[in-house]
Image (tube, rainbow, N blue to C red; front, side, top):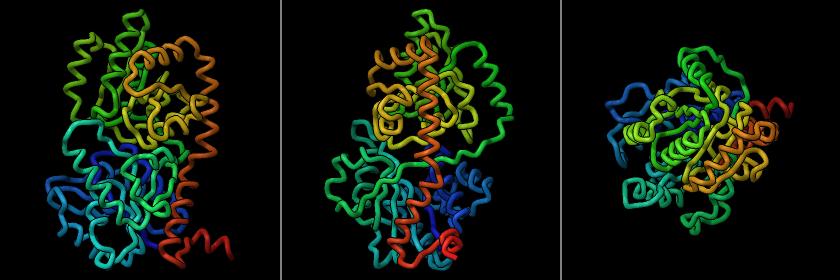
Length: 383
């Protein structure tokens, strides 16, 4: 069975990590996954393409002009027909819009769309327009997969038939990685100077890093010797840099930019923070749990359920700076309780959020949409 995964990616963050984990498991199952990576003509090799090739996964780059490029969509469909794919699996609004709005009789393939989460947090902007078009296109997908149950409550899903929506939580590979590289050595040296908070993600407003920085500044003013590392890049970099300077944190905050395989750095942190205003089910949360790092995270999306409503990590309301400060203080002052939560988190991620389980559940959907489809793993088990 051949599956064409479609994504327009700006880095290797949560959705990309989930996709790569899924493809690796599908290869082990005997499925043939291929990554169709959409980009503009000006872009060279994209980070997700390099990451996929590093995992020996097949990549097919498709370069096209920005926007709803139907000629580009047709090029991908023609490739899918030539290569005899059984199903299209979209990850993100670009693929959802390009193929969801194409009538099924023309598209010719079943379409699964995994919704990793919407990031709009207010105002009239292009993100709002993209998400509106995304929601419209999802009405025409054969199956929509959400990464947590809470997403079902979003008002944009009121028009879906219940049978068209399923929930499959993200999963991670528990394989160990080599931890030898120069950046890791630099970050390790930085963390030796004191208690260090870590955060990972795009530098964009919905991630709440500005709130986290204000909280760190407040605790430093109280006398806590804290440092912070933010791994990621984005449009908010200059704004956050100015905030760091104005708060007097220039010597206490390290922002090295985007890094591949951010999970290799998580074990260096004394606390991992996710102050997001909106999330689906962040892959980096699962990775932090697997790294046994104490967690403080916003009560948004699938985070509360994954953290067992506080047993596996501390929860705060989004935008609640005072609560965020209190929870960080609790981790610093009570490391024993923090360690107990880490043990709960380790057990949960190993038993509930593996990439193997995730891939098996996706294959169940594939079989429903492509009757008769079987993986090599299933064939062998039946012999």
